Length: 137
Image 1: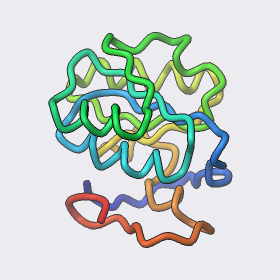
Image 2: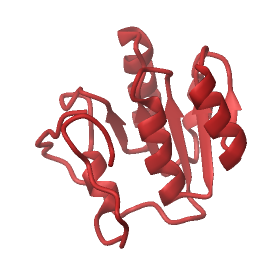
Image 3: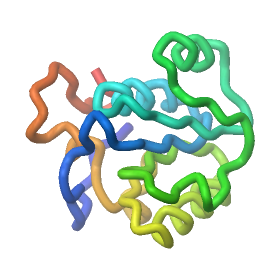
Image 4: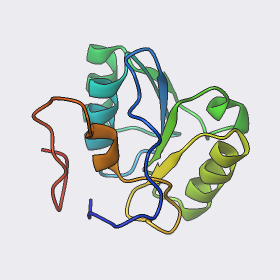
């Protein structure tokens, strides 16, 4: 996951009680889930397919897994949307659904579609997590 300069900043880091919606099952989805579960107690993963590593993580950390394509209603009331969809069309649909609901969105490796960087979610929060060139460490 590359660092990108984005003109917008995350308004404020999500609080533990805020719902973060992760969309997609791309190769970096597990890294994004790790970040989301550090930031929030309510994480929803929406992906038509997930691999065994993601499935184990979801079960262990109590992530709400919805194995299906994302629907606009999934983004209503979320504090942030993190999109890691391999399908370009699915990523764009998730972005527009999030924007219709006023939800800030980050799309992996797509700064042109992102409202914030993942590093913005970590600011003002003491943790040992940092974004690297390839993943969240």
